[in-house]
Structure formats: C-alpha cells, structure tokens
Length: 218
Image 1 (cartoon, one colour):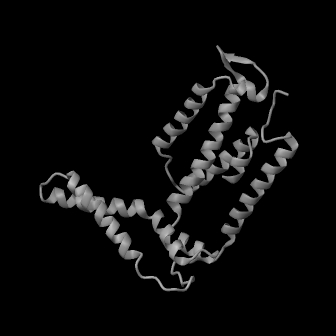
Image 2: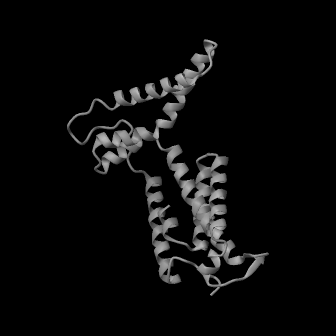
Image 3: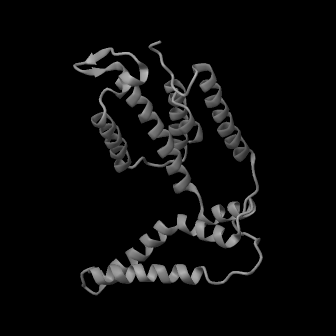
C-alpha cells in the first residue's frame, strides 16, 4: 500500500495489483460489489471534474475515442490500479486479522496495552454488532414483533454497554501476556521483505523516471 501511494509508475502498479489480487484469492475472500462500484465512481468523478487532466499531466494530446485522449486513459488506469492495490490489501488486513492478535502486536511494539486492546476491539466491532443485531432480530421475530427503531436503539445501547464492561479492568503496567500472541514465522518475514522491497523499487523508479510519474509519451 505504501509503495502504491509513493509511485505513479503504471507498469509497477500493474505488477503490485497482480500481487494484491493473488493474495486476495489466496485468502479465499470475495471482492464486494459495492467496493467495485466505489472505484468506478471515483474514476467517473475524476474524469468529470477534469477530462483533460491526463493531457496536462503527460504534456501530450493524442485523441483516442472522440475527445477522450490516450493520456487520460493512462491516467485513469493508474488511479484504478492504485485503488485496487490499496483497497485489496486493506480488505485482506481487515477481514483476516484477529482482533486479539492486532492488540498483541501493537502492545509488543510499545503501544500501551489499554490503547492496544481498544484498537483491537475496533476490528471486531462489525462482527459483534452483527451478532447482537441478529439476536435482537431473532428475538423480535420469535415474539411475532417487528424490529422497530426502539429495538435498534436497544441494540446500540447493549453494544456500548458490552464495550464499556470489556474496557473497565486494566492494571497500571503497560505490558501484559496475550493468549493470541504468535511469534514471527517465515511467511511473516517474507511478507515484510516483499513490502520493503516494493517500497525500495518505488523509490528507485522515482529516480529513474525523474519523478513519480511514468511518461511513455516522451
């Protein structure tokens, strides 16, 4: 994700996008339709705001389809690849990370465990909300009652109450023992090396291209 933010080299972003999609398939996840629509909406907004931005960016004007230029197509492709990389890796992190492991990792690198614990619980918030919501909805259906706005308010208050109870009991020390703590393995090391290597490549490409942008029209 960091490498994708640094570089605007379309060739490099294409390789990163393939790696991101391979990791996504490997994790056996499904890309949400609304996320694809969000990417499409982003590209549409960029094009509507400034249809000639690609021409100004690459300093060339080669018409492709009607007034749609090849430069604009390359610019939108670059943005599309950046969106795919960032959102794909973000989805992998959010959907495959155990909240307790996130807390343990943050505490291990020096973050106070109160804050580490609360951040970890944020990652499990959606699941806890879904479970509580399902229980309330099933209870209402069993009593042949509609799931009203009052029931939704009760759900939110219940979730907040559980969050408060879970965060009450802390000691004064900044460290604790985590049951979900796992030591680094070879896969972790390879993932970190790949991330660092991709950032290094993005920096090298900036030097080679004379900037973040890759301009094939020069």
